[in-house]
Length: 260
Image (cartoon, rainbow, N blue to C red):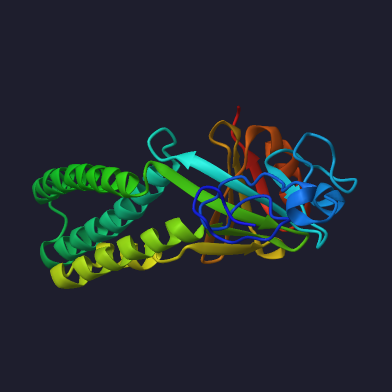
């Protein structure tokens, strides 16, 4: 069958379109020439458990034992991605500041007046970074039509976070432009951000996760391991289930939960 939204050909038993993320309605028996019982076993479409496990209208348990769901987030209402980008830039800024201060101390010794002057300059630079990141984020959100749509695949070993095809292409385009701008201007933070923007998928192996941070209000679970930070988004009705599923399998991880 074909997606009613974008026209992409998809499997008859798919719960959603892998290109645009549109939820797919099960075809009728007359359209498929077969019974829909196989689809009913794959996608419950309700709060009824699937194959004896958790299931909802958002989450699908497939016969291969993997849970899959699509999460659509408003880039204007949910600040998670904006805060992540701002954090990256401010960390780079803090490293530069520490380096400048260290050079000042080595060359001239500790001078409180000189330090105060550096702090004033860095303060204006930090403010400029916040303004620049805010403007850039709004442009990014507009290009993405205000939505961040991702697909998650989760099983006993780990979880895969990947942008749907349409948004992944846009993200790579933005990443290439940011990378080129950084190279031409000599701005290493832009180069790093451009390289990071080209990553449209991320996998977390549960046995390697060292820290779990849960944010129920933001529908977000952060999984941190060495050189790998993954963000899992899940609908409110499935949040407790996914949180427990992940935390019970990350046996080496420290768990913390922010209040609802």
